[in-house]
Image 1 (cartoon, one colour):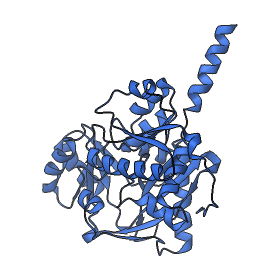
Image 2 (cartoon, helix red, strand yellow):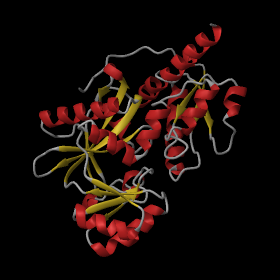
Image 3 (cartoon, helix red, strand yellow):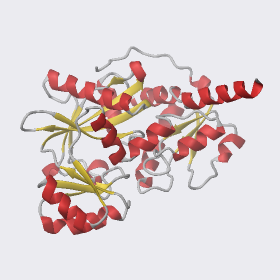
Image 4 (cartoon, one colour):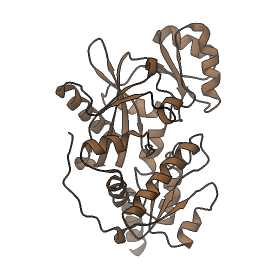
Length: 335
């Protein structure tokens, strides 16, 4: 599934005036500003007329007023990759990067995502949706130790706790509930932690090389993701070729099942006992910081950071469903 693409010619001038959406109001604002800053610099280095735009500081309608032709979404979390800003851009008629409204809304919700993947026969750890510390404790008894407790709709490992005893459940639940009223208790899969980006759409969607992550004491938290250099990233992954291909096929299937487009990154655990891969979640606006994994994987396939940003920008579009619906409505009105 890995695809070492030949050079693709993209005329930067054809991108028009570009807004790099960054910052926002989610718990991941700090990371978004880092991602957006990197994307902005990369696009400008390739000759794109790119400008920073923070939706928490500016009205989205200004995008139309000021003549922006497309948006690179470098927002993370709520109001960034949950379908809301995508819906606003659909109404404004401004093409944007990443999946559309429905795919974004589903993908940011880990519970809805897992329900769809499980229905489609894709492997994902067992889970329970809980609404109290008592329910979290009950889930611990059902799912076993260790167990992961996390907000249903946050990213960057915010509010995530690995619990190994019943007594830890209450504090872990309260932490997750600070970020989301819906809290997910998930069976912990012991084994290799990996991630794999996907580019493209539909039958043309393809996986980039798998990255194997080795964090201190297996703790790949917010700090170790973005602000330390102690986490090890292996790309090439060092996994057997058959395992790498199985993971790549799994993430492409996961991407297509949710009807994603443009780009995304899926996180996978490989169970130590039988080497079976399990999907954890999918990120539809992945990080693009100096510690981020999509650029790392792209480099391994021969795509440097500015080229990656340009390719993602070139894939910006509006939801095809909306276009079809509008056409059908106009046709019905004309009759």
